Amino acid sequence: MMKKENQAPTMKDVAREAGVALGTVSKVVNDLPVGESYRIRVEEAIRKLNYQVNTYAQSLKADKTYTVALLLPNTQNPYFASLAHHINMTLSRQKYRMLLCCTDFDPASEQEYINMAQRGKVDGIIGLTYNPNLVIEEGTPFVAIDRSMSPRFPCVASDNFAGGQLAAEKLADLGCKNVAFLRIGSSLNSETNKRRSGFENGCLSRGLSCEMKILNDGEPFSLFKEFLREHIRGGKFTFDGIFCVTDRLAWLIIKALGKLGIHVPEDVQVIGFDGIRYFGDEDYICSTIVQPVQEIAEMCVELLTRESLSTKPPLVCLPVTYACGGTTREHTASLKEDAETMEIP
Image (cartoon, rainbow, N blue to C red; front, side, top):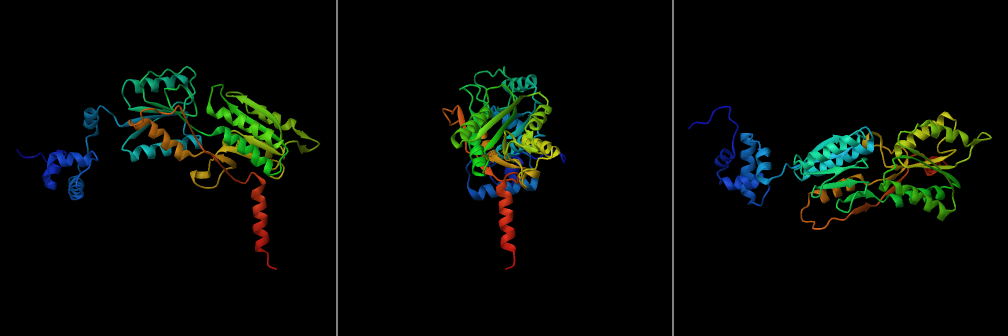
């Protein structure tokens, strides 16, 4: 029986073209061990015939979809966008697809995507969630980012306590004496809350005077502006250092300070948290505590997809680092040193 002209090539056609057994083609397609010479012949036949693997049939046979859902509030925030990029790349290397689900901080949307996973539409979920009443059934493969929900579900986070402490120590090393801690956040029990306790601990150990201004999600940013204005006395800003719990907040605070005539870093030094860069890979937008985004992504995928892990840790904390981004004075000091070295004697 002759093959129709427009009919898609099959695995049998690939085997015939490569001159190998059908089982050999199956091994190559499923990335199983096979002799190198056979693999080359099969891959050449696949390219020549433009053979497309039937992933749907593969999924039915293996009882897997090879798809993982990623729940994020949005991809407008550069940190969330970076997480999405690195998780997608890590999954792709393991032959998984990523289903991006942006929830816009909506609790009902988060629960809907969880229910989708429980109906078997995806093999598992990696989620950065905010629903305090999120229901996840026993046996649902789930890895949380930044939020320890249950010993049943691993949580991957940066070492937020160490990051907060590092910010305080860095401000102290740069000569600050009177600092402020600024935060916008939810009331959820999140790993990110430890940034505050770490900063308090660092201030205590270094003898820094510290004042805090904390807003809940939904409260107006104007409350921060009012706080800043209240600390301009006699034409001078009373704080010489500020730690913001995210780089986005640091960026907004720096803009607000500029409108008040307060210069950064000359009048006050500012450190954020996240490690956000312009255009993803350019300069840091501010001096910052850098989260290891790629390592977070790889650990999330590792915990979700590796069936060999008999016991999964309830919490994995990954180390953070500090990076100068021009909003602390070591930046101006280094510029001055560069200028001095360029002077002609």
